[in-house]
Length: 277
Image (cartoon, rainbow, N blue to C red; front, side, top):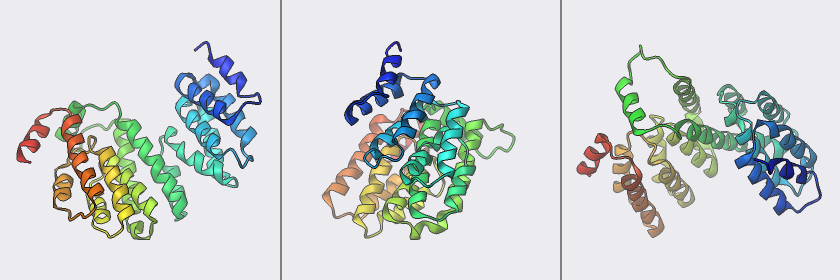
């Protein structure tokens, strides 16, 4: 975009926080890997500014979007994760790890067994899962079901990455009860978004708990992910049988069904399930 040089030069001037946000959004949508250094310079300039937490998060989000496939971006993000003295940068960098598309760094962070770190890792894994699935069609789902369990099938890089994510999430299930409410919700969100085979177990565990806040958060997670879940029948049937007293939660359950049946592509599986319902 011809406006990019103008926008990037403005970032170096004394402008309001709101104007900086607008420019970062513009670069996120219109910039390229050529603008990575500008964003890194911006982050470094404000890294110790206590008033700039929201701006730094937005800058890292911009970096994640324009820096895909850029070695400099990956190196910088990893350096901020491993040099965790600045908490604001540390958590913002974790949120950008989905750009790197490797599970080893997530596992390294989860081994710290720190609730806040785990929360941000699960958020990042969710974003990575959404990136993997965003271009997949119903036909892709059908093909994956057809080949499921066939050892000879050659996995694509994305399929191998998803498998590694599922294995990693499976390793931390034993910690679920020790997580805070927000981390439990983020964990379930990550599980649902990669179609982990145990996702329904943990979603229902949360929904059947007495914690209204957790229940509400997990219902929103299901709403967000319902069109990506390959085999939703068990989950949807479980939602029907839930004993929910809060009207808002019951409304959310209805909205989940509406979203699934209105948005989901009309595959044979969809038709059979709808008829059974």
